[in-house]
Image 1 (spheres, one colour):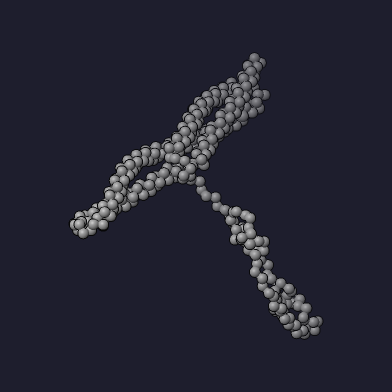
Image 2 (tube, helix red, strand yellow):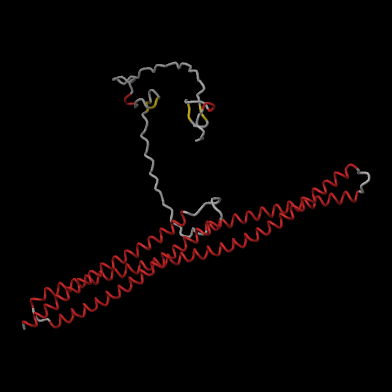
Length: 345
C-alpha cells in the first residue's frame, strides 16, 4: 500500500542518516588512531633523545647523570601512561561503533524482509554497498589499532627493562663508591702512617750513620728491614688505589653503555664504482705517450717509409729547494718558520 511505501522510504532515510553518522564516527576513530601513533612516535623520539643527550666520560659526575636519566624516565613513563589511556578510549569507541554497525545491519535486514516495492531496490543495493565498504574500513581500522597497540606495548616493555637495568647498575655503583671511599680513607691513613715511619727510620739511620761504631748491627738491620717493609706496604696500597680507580671507571662506563639496548642497524653506504680511465695514446715509432697513436704518427710518410727520429739533447736543469710548511702542509708558499697559522692540518 501507499502508507507502507511511505513508511519504508522513511525508514530508508533514517538508515541513511545513521550510516552517515557511522561514517563520521569512523573519521573520529581515524583521528584517534593518528593521535595514538603520534604518541608512539613521540615515545620513540624521547628514547632516541635520551641516548643523544647521554654525556661522555668526564663531562659530568655520575650523580648528575643519574638524576638526568631518572627525570627522562619519569617523563617517558608519563607518555606511556597517556598513550595507554588513549588506547583504552580508542577501544571503547571501536566497541560503540561496532554495536552501531550491528544495529544498522539488523535494521537493513528488517528493511529487506518488509520491503516489497521494486522502486526501492536500487536504494537498498546502494545502502548495502555502503555498509560493506564501512565493514571493510572498520576491519582495517581495527587491524591498524591492534598493530599500534602491539608496538606501544613493546616500547613500554623496553622502557621498563632499561629502567630496571639502570636501577641495578646505580645501586651497584653506589655500593662500590661507598666501599671505595671507605677503603681510600683507610688506606690513605695507613699510607701516611707508613710514610711517617719511613721518615723516622731514615732520620734514625742518618743519625746512626754518624755513630756507626756505637750502633749494634742488629739494631741497624732491624731499622733497614722496617724501612723496606714500610716501603713495600706503601707500594701495595698505591696499587690497590689504582685498581679501585680502574674499577670505578669501568662501572661508570657500564652506566653509560647500559642504555644502548635499542641499537639501530648501521646504514650501508654503497660506494660508487670508480670510472675506468681511458687508454692513453701511444706511438710505437716515437715511443711516447699522450702525443698521438701509431697510425697517426707524423714520421710515417705516404709511401710507408719511416723518417729517422731526431735525438734531442736534454739540457741539465738545476734543481732548487722548494719551500714547504709543516703546519699548513703545502709547497711553494712559505717555510715553516714563516707560517702565521697556529693550527696544524
